[in-house]
Length: 216
Ligand SMILES: CC(C)(COP(=O)(O)OP(=O)(O)OC[C@H]1O[C@@H](n2cnc3c(N)ncnc32)[C@H](O)[C@@H]1OP(=O)(O)O)[C@@H](O)C(=O)NCCC(=O)NCCS
Image 1 (cartoon, helix red, strand yellow):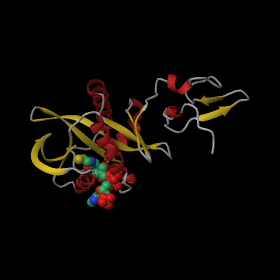
Image 2 (cartoon, rainbow, N blue to C red):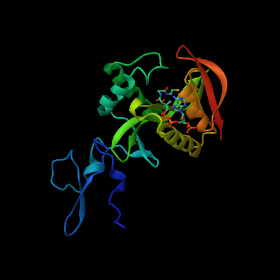
Image 3 (cartoon, rainbow, N blue to C red):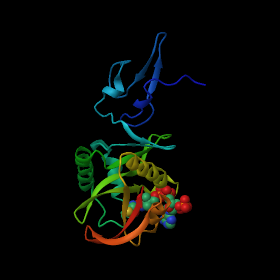
Image 4 (tube, rainbow, N blue to C red):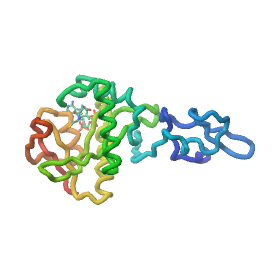
């Protein structure tokens, strides 16, 4: 068995790839690609781009979005198939605004959609997380998921959605919901797999949605 890696929580730097470990006779250091020193002693946790993992699953890590995730988020929200059931496809500027709204939600609620990163490749595959959604004046914990098209049908939404559901319950929520367009069969399949069931119709963002719900 290999020796446990030091700072295992520090896998998240700019590229989200595992850090390079440098062994000397006396110790082991992380070499951070963002810091110029040869063997800085606490590089990754001190890095301003570092975001701790919020949830880890078998294949994914979920962490808060940063503005420099824009390339991926713009590609995701700019994809007509991914955005089929949303009111519009987003421009790059609108994708930046989306990230800014998520940052505001982290500050206000402590959570929102997170960036889901494939642990093995160190690359993002989508956004999954918990949104504080106001419905008829009531704030509801909503599980949200958008997976980029190349990664569909690999179980990622179900895997991260289940972990998000459990995260919400562990933090005291008595139920979770998902707002899903009646035509969005893929999303309904994910919700069903997470144990949610359809309840009522609401108009959300000007569009008909079904409220899927699971009580703890
Ligand atoms: C909905 C979405 C997140 C599903 O992501 P995914 O990672 O491909 O889903 P999973 O692989 O985890 O699949 C979970 C279940 O849904 C089913 N499913 C996934 N896509 C489906 C589709 N297009 N039609 C029918 N069932 C589908 C899977 O078969 C699986 O069920 P099973 O295990 O019983 O076979 C993805 O299609 C997406 O991002 N769509 C665009 C954005 C969107 O609509 N988000 C939801 C808004 S409410």
